[in-house]
Image (cartoon, rainbow, N blue to C red; front, top):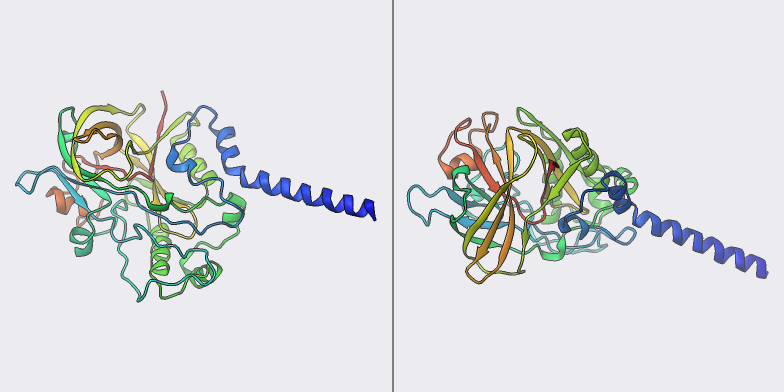
Length: 345
């Protein structure tokens, strides 16, 4: 009997050890694939979830800018994330999680360049995407900015083996919603369905895209797209959580190393961490050091697109900046939970 008990205990410890190793698998994969690349906090905070633990708030961490102060010629305009689940309430992955009322209309992300903006995107949700012109990127430039904290730090990554075992397609939406106990007519369901549609959408001209459902798949897409494992991953970092809307001054602008090519990964609302990643051509990344009137320091990641000819003519950037596809380079800051990948050195 003692041997049976000892064997049972040993078996339990082995299972626990395997489970513990599996929980750490995404971080271990990063270290093995990218030993010389520090992981940005926007990604590390999505690790170390307990097995099956996906019931964590998700946020967009957006920012709002008005550099034109309402005057003609203003070239920085705050526009909405498109209502795709900024500050999602708890409920994902929780049996019996309560929906937030009636079905809602969910618009698409402004970071998908094939889509036209809606009136909601232009006027009702000025909290996430910031579009401006590249000529505004210089030391001394002042902008009124509201860097919004990401509620709940975002949904957790699943290990790739778990994520790959879960259906991820619009036609499987009922099964997916049932798996995570999400009411079909809830706001969460509408957000998840929109994420699936965005992930299935055709890439814009000159763009390569994929939705990463795990940290491992994000690393693979970024390195294969850039053709090297010598990469840098960067996110916007705000020195003071909950800083108010205020005037920020650009103290310095540094362009990322490498050719005019990068991979941007945008956090999407879902039951677990999902990022819409895309490789773009004729695109430049910058790190912008900014200081607010209250002393808050920000290291913001800005992306500038020199070739917008393949974008939807009614994309939100053209409407707010009053430029045309293929015209002046269009830039935007990235929210705090998005990641830009560039070649290093």
